Length: 49
Length: 258
Image (cartoon, rainbow over the protein chains, first blue to last red):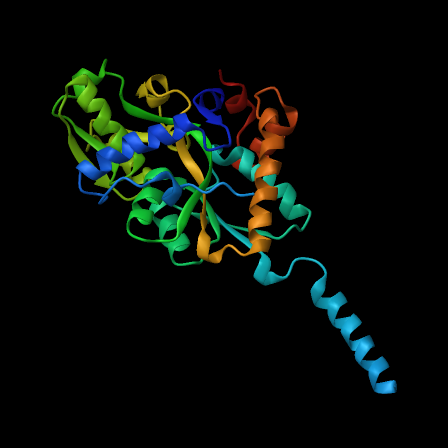
């Protein structure tokens, strides 16, 4: 249980580092043919107000 | 005059009957992948919201694929799901949007104890979920460590775990709820969080087409509730301990295992 919480973090937001990570990993999906293209931020992220 | 008075009375009755409280059509339908540890803060938040009758309905699924299918089909308004499934759906033209990251890290490469490093897995069969975040992370790790591997695809994490235990695969890439079920003789060889600190894993995702103004407000309110609860997700919180024991059936010994 402690290990589960040690290796799982919870944080809200759409921070730039998170977006960069998702974009980098998604690039692999594109290279493997799972996805046709990398999305622009406005296509995938939405900040609710 | 009497007719006008009657109409007013009828209107008042209708408004009090249907205008107050949450109408069923305004209920926020949320999808989660199993009652897992990953969703601890969300489950906390949702349960208190549901108890307060704030108009949330939660449906549990066995895999990310199932959640993706349900939210694309408009059967869900929101879901917590691996980001790779959201990106691929949006690239195909489906009206999904990520409104917040939530669960970070939690994914790891597991193997039997006789494997001492990732390099030992060169040319090995490794279980992954096809086109998932875990497969993509494994690809990156293989590239960085200079190994090649034979990807063996499964539809659910539990199937991967069974294949690992039976020796059908040498390793598997999974995440915390599955990793917790590992029996003796297996280890987490590599945590992806060690190389990618705080990386998003599962995000709060919405179906834009299903999101009315009322439902949008519900999502915002829910995220505010999660934000309040996050500081309470600690091992020494008795409330969390009680919740984990009742919700996940964890014994005192499992909780205390350190």
